[in-house]
Image (cartoon, rainbow, N blue to C red; front, side, top):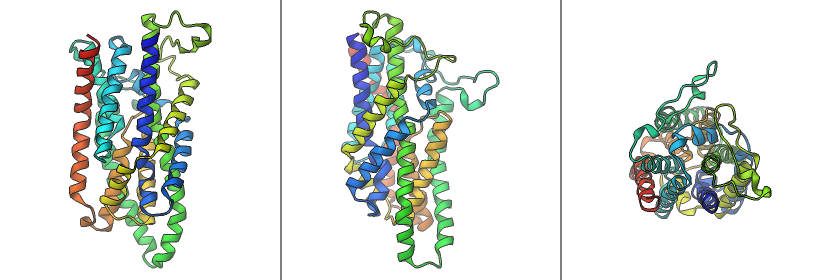
Length: 360
């Protein structure tokens, strides 16, 4: 029982770090355009993240039952997976790089599961057909839920961001710059709120799935047989096709933890996204946030644990490209892309090594 509760605690630590690590994704643009002060933006992000986290469970179900074979997962597997993600998040946060907490979590889970299965690659679910009569996106697997969205969501962010910004340039061409700034300054509060909601809806669910997976593993292993009656809610028999609802208490705890982490802020990453990559005005911030939030919202509905970081960063790039191609600081973009490329292999290696050290 102690180990299972430790896993839940580590998962919540990851969620808290995700909150302050990815806070920048929700509020970097609204802070850099000076529409809101940092304190106001953090309050907005914390509240909207909390609300978004309570809506839907599609992403949580993907994490808990759609990426790795649960028979190869135990509580130590999940502890090591989370530890790999936490270490990578802290490293990239320290250097101010907006890397993906989503991919850090997935990479850690893949590496730790492989170590648990003694290198048996069949422990990973590459593709999973949907139930009869259901749509293709209701299936699962690393290929359809992680690998393809890892490329398609940043591409969508860049292209849609550029198109939205181009449309806004056309609509606002004859208007006075001061009027445009005032109007979009107000609209950007709405787009920042939508961004926070979509971030909570996508990212908080990932930890919900991990906690549910840990409790299923603990229940199957008998680790929770001796818990007192008042803790019986910890026992979860399965999260299969017919019983895949994430318990409400898990949703509430994860939502509150992410909101608390969001309130802690993430100023290093805000500086990179909001100031170093491209100079933003309220109209640019509105376009970038609306684009990224829409990408995340759609992905959450499809059960795809995509990267909030990738969505907002490429949306900002697209907005900058519509403004002027050389408005983007490409050397900063290069650093960010390296962090993206390295995240899954680095966290997979960390998860694997941690399990070999702690689980053997």
